[in-house]
Image (cartoon, rainbow, N blue to C red; front, side):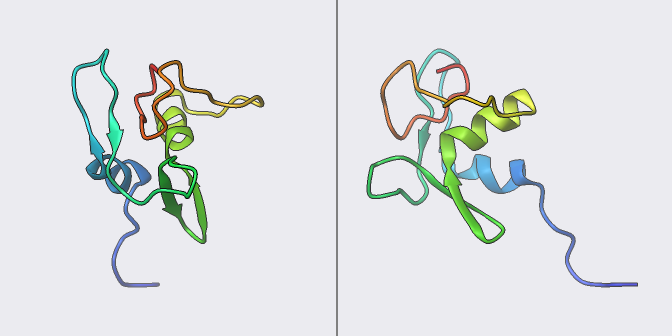
Amino acid sequence: MKSGPKPRLIEDRFWPHVDRRARDECWLWTGALFASGYGAFRDGGNTKLAHRISFEIANGHLPAEDVCHSCDARRCVNPEH
C-alpha cells in the first residue's frame, strides 16, 4: 500500500487563488496568467484556463463549445459570468 500525502482536491487548490466577491461581481484570478491575460491553473502536467476550471467545478462538466465570459474580464473566474 502506498503511503504519503493524500492528493488535494482540485477545488482546494483552485479557490485560494480567487478573489471572491458578491455573486454578481467578477471573481478575479490572483494566480499565474497566460500571456493573453487569462488565468492559468496547473492541473497535473497540464496548464489550463482558470475560467474553464471554475465552470467545470460549478457545473460538473465542460461543454463542447467554448466557455466565454459575459463580462469580458479575462481574469474573471465567476462561473456565472
